Image (tube, rainbow, N blue to C red; front, side, top):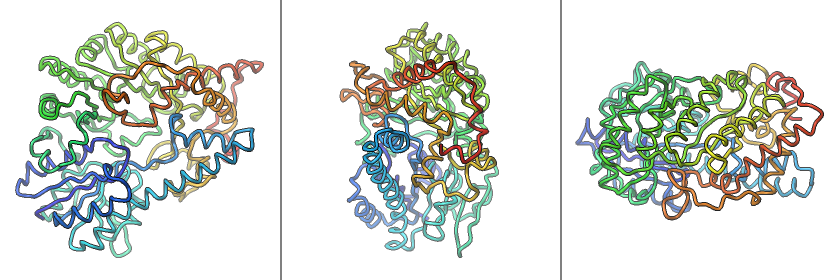
Length: 541
């Protein structure tokens, strides 16, 4: 095969780092192979099929590689209107609000199914109009839902689960995919392969002039946050998370000099000043300290005046690391605290102690951190009680007392049930989910299950959230956001345009404090039966 067209399927605008790494990997090993990157996210929906057809006609690829990054299962946060509509539909006391929410919910279901149907149509377009081209598909969304999606793709499509560098190279060279994680449907039968060893990252870097030559749409990302990967793999077992399934549990590190070389290239050649470390966790544990430290030290030494962010466990921040983070330009942070109850965290296999999380916040404050912190809470997790809910509210107050209330923004999430996770396995065993259920099928009934908020606490939590959302503008922070999470026009848009809406009104704080009032107004917080152990039928209460 002598030519590859990479197609980044539509999602919220985010720099297509996986595709760029794949293209660079192939170029370094097969420089004679022609390559082109097409980002369909940057075109209006009505133009995408035409753009893909024109690009394939002009380029005549032997291989078309689709990257499917995102399928939004129903696990929205409070900045997403779909959560508010769902809560109004299921819990609002006003029947008019329920009717209005049902109409909006139907519109959202239509958009959800239309998005999946549209993304599936692009490989079919290639099969229909360019039948000689081999089709491959990968990405986070495909990996998560491969069993369902492979049935809807053209026969012979090679699906890659997780990382795809070595598999792609084998396809180009005409070698069998032995030792790779793949899925393929041929003659009505589905076959899978297992990865024998994960890809090494010691030679993974970016030749930016070459990337610019094959990705003419790069100009659309000037001023946006540029993704940079420092490692792959996640050693943790968080019950609801897909990262270990997608990337594996073995952590593999890129050499710090290569990481900073990527940053430096984008800094000097594209004028990039904002970066996002795309790792499952930037600090995966104590063994990651040498790499993380050297990366930050090199940023400082090379005088790269940047703002950076990523997923960071504050429980692993040390005083010295906090100082390096601040000096190297750390921006706003998003922290998945999940719960303020150590019991709940242990049950979810989160792998950190709350006291260490608080210590990391203290170290940041002492180092002069001036960014803002989003605390993601997943209320009503398995084994939640009224007492553990009060502990979550208290944990927000603790972090706010350390960093300052004007810097800390709690955001209400609810656990989304994803395939190939421990949470899904538990709920199947308990009968909460039915064996053979389709995780991509959204109906009013399935949404109520997949948006994990079971009885008996669901109505209390919904009451607090709905009350807070109705007072959206009561606690608005008038100051513009700065750093990697900013949506200010002077910097760049937030990677998740919905998320900023939950922050601007600071409705998460209002929801937590309203929930506290509700709980304390009862005679006494009672330790309810853990929701995880309720019979499946009660989850719809």
